[in-house]
Length: 338
Image (cartoon, rainbow, N blue to C red; front, side, top):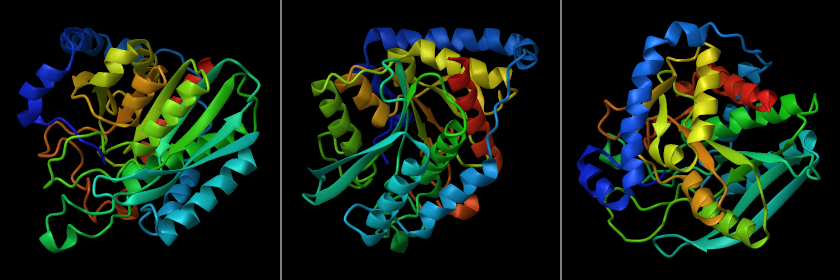
């Protein structure tokens, strides 16, 4: 879904990140120790638990995977785009569809759509809740070599975040959130280079790159953004992704603090993790809007992500409603706190 830094890349990572970011690793680690000491106090703090239906979110994930792999230029991609537009139109005040063409690493022209549902578009105080909705065109990390050229369902990698946000849109449609909220689905995120190809250039997050540059040109403003990526696995662990900590440490603190107050500390872990080149990076860089990434990282796996990452096993059978509930409830609590 994107280039990531694994343990073998750490030396290169230190070359490319500013010194302040490396220092933030240490600071976050020290904060982690303090948070562990006070875990009981944090968990028992009062916080309003909002309504969020994990069953509804799960059905939204399944609906996407039922179309098949949502690879740009495919029928499944076109069908899912129409579904997402229709669902956002049911719940949001307005829907904006940004159609564009981008060229992939292999020269393929990807006919793409960024889809945004807006609550209170007239409100100058706004936040963004985002996820990518396309899926990987090849299972390049599958254990079986014969599968590595096949597209994946992307139930976790893509559909899980969209499913959570569609349920959040449904909940927000039943009450006035009090601020402007843009629910944004990025396209053409996961068509990056396969693991066997080393090609310079920004080939991941093509949709968010396009959106962020257009947003900057239009002087679009938002207070902050939250990106969801791979938020449906049963063993999900969400650490402080390091680009998030660098660009938006206050938002990281707010989200992880809210999750811990809700009792979700086993999911939202107060420890630093590797920086990930994901959609939020381009929103920070090109649109100058601080955005964080809630993304499953597994520090014990060989890839740094879940065992089904970029494999054919990333299907609906490996989606856990409990994890969807944790993430969705946390996001709604953050929104309500504003």
